[in-house]
Image (tube, rainbow, N blue to C red; front, side):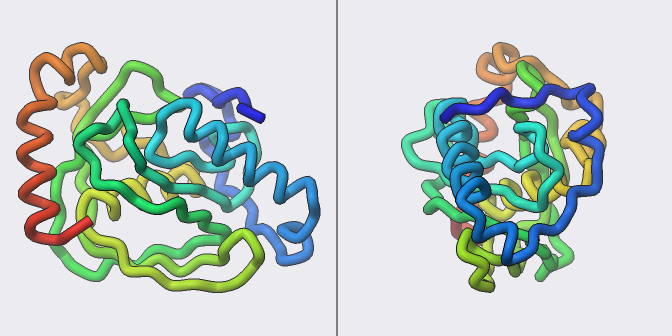
Length: 189
């Protein structure tokens, strides 16, 4: 089921989300919620979505990019479900990522992101995993993880870089596409 996406201004988007226990994760309702979260992300053409974006203060997010019309320049990324994630930066380098957010329609802005991270989390079955993530995809994981800590991309962006989607497409997307190619060449993903 496609869920309603929580919009900026809703207090749940500013909460430090609660960890999920293995017992809670095993409940059929939670597994249905994860399915709904994935379906909502896909229906909205998001690169990722976090639980607070559908009104739940839980430490869960999903990332996936596949034939995404909203982000045609992003590399494909397999579906990854992260429960209780921890992200560690593996380099001091940063790049500027031109981000948008399903909870902030029609706004984009540049956010400094680390191009090489380690993600430690549980999968939907409570099994721990680790994954190194690089490049543009690393920025997507950081964006979703920020949601679990009550942080939204405008908090991290230079407000002078804000634009609407139409202005982004007209004025900046071509340069972003070239920048993405450079980042993918250097870091992968």
